[in-house]
Image 1 (tube, rainbow, N blue to C red):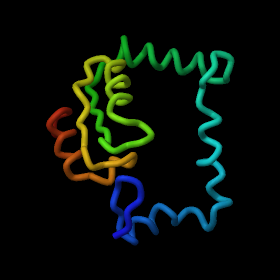
Image 2 (cartoon, rainbow, N blue to C red; image 1 turned 30 degrees about the horizontal axis):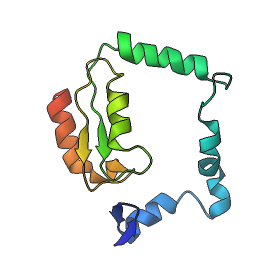
Image 3 (cartoon, one colour; image 1 turned 45 degrees about the vertical axis):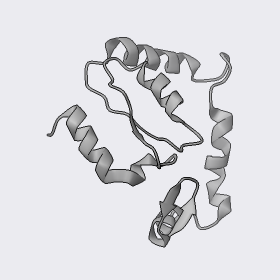
Length: 121
């Protein structure tokens, strides 16, 4: 097992994450992503983001489930709570204390909780 951030990944897991990228040149999109975040009102996509935020807050007709890694340095629980509060009818987020940013790596507990919140199919 190898520790990456707050998550513990097996060599197989790491290989799966790295599989689509033969070398670092192929990860340029990931490195460019922060510059695409709309931090100013004049950036492209701001109007669409505001319309989406209005939809989730006021017109979303469904149920929602959120989960967050307690050790996530990118999107910590306080940020998830702020996001959750903007989604109509969304319950408190599930916090996985030992999980990092890729909380989906803790699949089974998340799946069970999501089924409890959203209802089994």
